[in-house]
Length: 391
Image 1: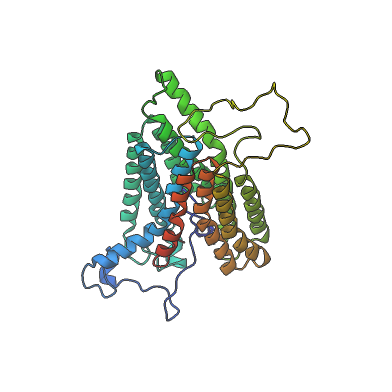
Image 2: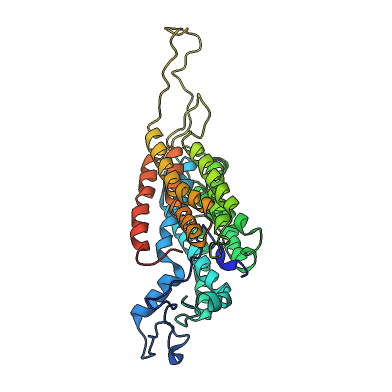
């Protein structure tokens, strides 16, 4: 096995799961010879069926996995200390298009392996033509870049290398040691896309010209870099676990992912600034702490002042705990027994943990409302995943 089917799809962690089998133990039924290669042809080749065609494209694009995408841009906007705005929405739409471009391109690039290992997939089963999948990948890429351009030049400057990473991963890097790093870079760039789009277009009331706007953009992207690094670290861990999921993984990979989850959980529960500083709400500039009086002695030197918790401390801790609970347990089981089923559960847990991680990153940046909005996507994604597998 080349290992290409054991790696996730681009623009985020999305491993390809094991082949589904029918009730009789065989793979999903193929279309008849007369309907081979036509989208929507039934098993008996009696004419087009919109329902069958829609189901095939839903499987190809793995639509339930789209719920793991909006949190990237929202976390980027929160990390940049900016309120979400229409440009943030454009960044989310751009991310969704580039994500689906990676999904379609993934199956097109792996169509030969799928013909032998997963004949039930839409391309080898003949429900979708390979040329249609490639055309969809090109169309989604063009749409993603166009939407990023509408959000401003800074957003396009980030979306372009993101799209290049998506195509490079699917066509060249997937089965190489650089595959997990490319996947991590894609998720990190997706978060930075939200930061660049939110802070890079238009002017704020306090801006005096182009120089002030550029400084605000640079500051927003700089603020988002730590969150992008944390998201990339999680992506790197789960991608490494997924590389041999259908054959059985490695205990060391699962242990490394478990350790990464523990470190990330610890970092998520801590504010992004050092002690003695505060994080301003999104959209508000930093102000000096006027309550600190260095010229006055303490009222009671023998009694240390109580640490004051920020309003985002409780949701930040809760969401970090949800992230750890979602990812750590399946990683632990895969470390004890790296069999294909347990490794695949570990990968699925890493995918599902993406949403609480994004929410925790937003809460860590002080954007509690954005964090809660992102967290709501988790149960919705779980519900839709019952109908169409995200792996």
